[in-house]
Length: 314
Image (cartoon, rainbow, N blue to C red; front, side, top):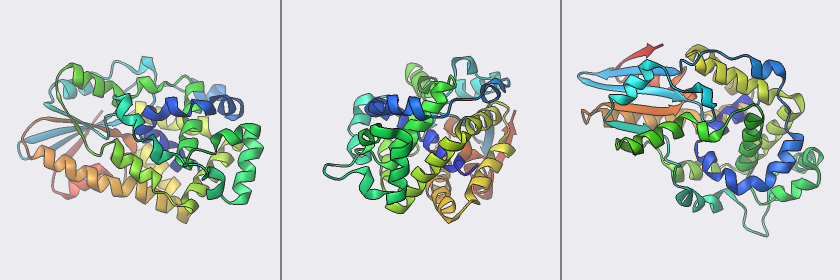
């Protein structure tokens, strides 16, 4: 379970999808070393329900839909209740709009090291030795990327080996639909904000991320964790999703710090933005990572503390 904080959070950063083409140089090494999914990991499927909440404040209504950022074609269509919530919305709000490749490419330098600096300089000698042991000569191809990129690339590769597809991500699906349907599309954060956040991780945090990644690759945890998250999301099981995050945050001080930075702090900003948008009186359909809507300090709990009525819709 240690890797769950890194795996889900890095997957949950939709910005990663926009950078996938940039670290394709890692693909061969990752494909050879990433743990293959077990039959059990890919077989446990349930019918799609998703994670949907209705939020009311006086006459103002919003729907919060928890997403996973890599999915499968057979996850669609969404349930009627989700579709009704989307169709009735004036505004679609997402974490970040990553549908424009050119704008995403402009941010790539923030996730890379400028020569002569390199990844090795920011990891403990033991951690770098483990990277070399796992990836072999291909480790040199990773020197130009910050830890978040390497962690995300491996996570995505594992997901794709299991049949998941970044182009089928729930966020991207509704981003594209909102544009096609000419609905107002609003970013709660934006790609630049998210990139600045993950690129600000210090060396200790980056080292912990890579060390946890390597450990999970060796134990084969990654496919099992993605399966747990995916199945909980499809079943609309907010309790399981919340427990996965709670367990992750309890592992060590580094895990607690990462969870606060990448989840709790962002939830405060997201809740404020949702509240502000609701005050406009327009109907709102919000799509954010499912982890932001489950458990303590989630967007859902924060809105409830503001006096709003939040109802989970199965």
